[in-house]
Amino acid sequence: MTSSTHQQTRLDKAKEIANNPGDYKVCEGCDSIVGSSTIICPNCHGYRFDTAAARVVDQAVWLGCREQTSVTSEDLH
Image (cartoon, rainbow, N blue to C red; front, side):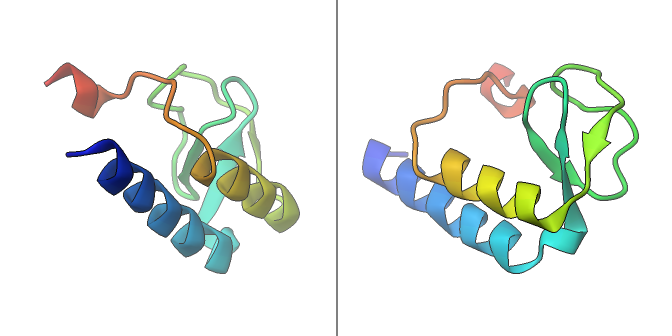
């Protein structure tokens, strides 16, 4: 996947999250956005989350506008 394609994918995902903030929450340990049913963050194994819609939208916009810096499980395959 090219850098511009990857960035567009991040923007598209950010739009999806921002349009449906009730379906997501932000991990207070690593600032990852996870599904609302997540109990333990898959990235940092944290268990405290911010469910406020405004926080989810702000985090989605911030993450969608920058390059990925974290390693995800998909990167390890």
